[in-house]
Image (cartoon, rainbow, N blue to C red; front, side, top):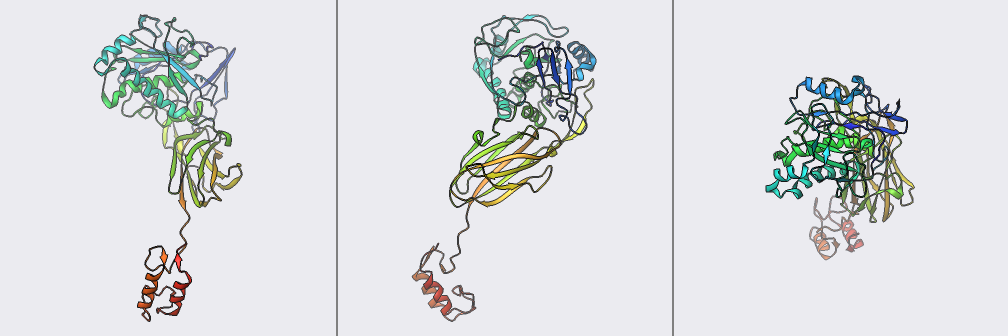
Length: 482
């Protein structure tokens, strides 16, 4: 399902940080995020309204060491208006905060791909021939297609967007997705030789298609082909609507330069995905949509990682079943660090310090099968975990956990939730001197054998001396311990 409203391209190559760039484009108007403020890079997400259709634009991602003169030349050519390069303009596929299913395809070799940047030739697609040759010893097409699948699977883990590969009918480049081709089409052709621009990608409102430079070292085996995967993952970040982020310090996937010191989307990129598409469990904003943690027994536990609240109005519901006699301990912990981020600039060396740990003051409630509140937890503040310890569940059955924000400094708070069940403590059985779970003849023999002794284990009455009080306790609790 492609949205066509104007033509927007994001050119990119590499691994870095993800910008929360999003615009919803309609006939005659687009809505774009303004550049981040020092306190909250996403708080003004819908403040600026830009009149008119978005015009052809792209943002380039470059190989490390690319001269800044080349960076500025390509960026200016792709953006046109120099000031516009600092704007955050993208789009989402399903409406902001929603996820869905995207198809992708690899057009046949020979399809003509026009030039998009200065110095790039119009040339035929050669993705099949080129990658089949590079990966011949690994099995050819199934192998390199699996590398693409690994990238899409990782974005699914973050956003819940599902991906399905389909065949491609070879329709002209720029054709919308249909039953005969993917929503996202991926090709390879010459761009500018090895280095420089590694690839570029359209935003969703321009089709989301990806163009890879055939001259790059796609066969690099380092870290399970991380060069390949990080370039594709960065490009598809543009395909999801995200722009570049600065400074270029090798911390975020959507920075403008390739970095292979980490694998795939990082914290800033994850926040971008959650804000624009929801986390992988979305929608789970009611008991009827609750994400199941499964049937938990005594001593079982369940953990949800890399989940998050989009904004102060978002809620997440989870469900689990428990047996009778269970105690529930639930911990909800915000996740984040302080880092510098900002929109792309000419030197990509600036930004504002931002604490992703303290975006929201998280809270949660434990609820019964009818969604009635059993316990509410909001004891701490921003950046701190909330915990409910050994809550005595009223019986066997289904329970819900509702996570929300008590207060907010911005959007996209990532968190982890842990749920653990334990059993009720066993009732004391002091007459079971032998510890075999039974009060019987063996325990009686010990009491009689220690009669009159001081400080003996048989002095279960605590009187200091074994005697009639201890005998009475043994006889009075005869049989199995409770």
